[in-house]
Picture 1: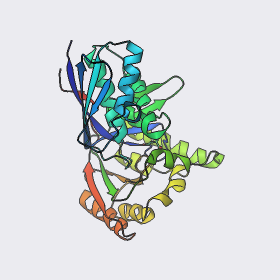
Picture 2: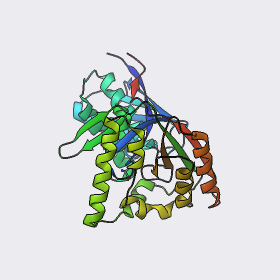
Picture 3: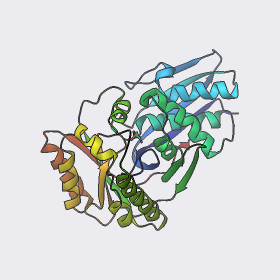
Picture 4: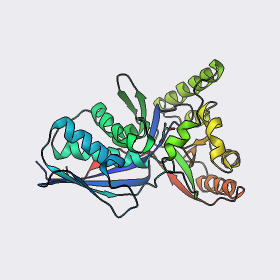
Length: 308
Ligand code: HSE
């Protein structure tokens, strides 16, 4: 059995508009790398050059490892080394990437042969450290890659290979995000929704799934319409409406908030002018006196162990 395993996990975008807490897509914009090493001394030690919590209870990877040690009654101490590539707090699945990498690495380290649903469940348990509650959309995408649909009670995840000509332009605004941002942005969502809004979101969500099955980026993009969560959150993103309008005018098929925000994501075909779309998004943020980083990316594979 290995004594050290390194796993790389991708960033992800959750919701894709109407699929709140249900849809996730792994994107190759950023990656986290987590190395687990067995140690003689008991306990969990977290090492990172990045500005992240090193208390295992408050660190997504730490919490995953703690839960897995408890569940599988392993005796070693574990050192967790985390290299952050995914910016934290911007709706790019940063906490999920570390959590997914930790779950996949622990599985490999102890040769547990866990199935996909169990890996996603353990990875999701880490989300509590940052979101305050468990949601599986980002972790499922980061573990499995591609487009995922999450069913809960009981948890089961369905993966669909995205079309090869699907592209995303992501604008990450340079904003001061609140600590525990996901918890804050989950707090603004209405507790009750109108039936007509639910029908609209459901029909669009069904079309997104169909778009992935039919490998049709046009159908995916044109169905990225959310009348429930996006309207409740968009006030938290300066210039959101302009960013969206600009991207659509520049040829994007659909635009929405990436996960809990504040990044904005545009879905397009690879044949679109992706630089034009990114520039248009950037100008949208400028109109609200906000700078942003833009990234053009593709769907990604899931978490990969560096030891085969
Ligand atoms: N579905 C979650 C939310 C994703 O929108 O709150 C958080 O990254």
